[in-house]
Length: 287
Image (cartoon, rainbow, N blue to C red; front, side, top):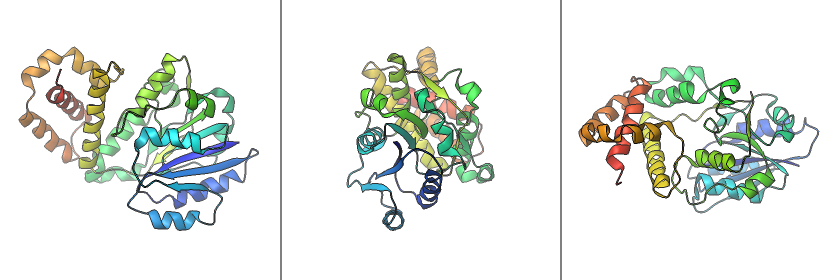
């Protein structure tokens, strides 16, 4: 059996679930859809009303447990031997499930991400679009050159036995780098990741301010992981460690706020974001 596992948080999933139900009728192997709602405060009633009379396994969690723990919980919740993990704020292609079925024997498989082109015109969401379009939307031929560094948890296939043997780290409670850490864990267990062309379209763009907040949380996770001996091969951390002495000479809260102001306009190039990350790491590093 194939289980499609969707962690839900504050998003209308009706269109996604309708498409998945339609595609599941067209394939040759038994398929189930499993949804865990991570204590959403929005869209709960309309999602539940849609799911109520459908063949969908659904549970609402009273407490938010975070991105790592909910993926582990979904592995326990699902009945299938193979799991497709799919974020809730996405749109899938017409043969999405079938493409993954063709790779059931390939181990861990990542399908990729693309962003809706027409959303790029709104400056309030421009930073997220630029990060997605320029950093996350990568062709599989390039992703396969660095398979662990380009892996994301928003769209992947895995045998259930792998995620049970190498689960996500439940100690990561705030946002950020649970996917990087899991990919790094796979590499230490010599479990390969294959990248294919089966992208989802990311729909849930966040405002510049919302994205910066999440980036800051992810950077704090990087420092916390490093302080516990888990140094991830992330570019921002590599450059921070390389130029740490120089950064300490120039870093200040005033500089951080100036860079933040530029990023909030939505019109700054991503090199400003890269510099912002380095200054943020410098100011927040206690070591």
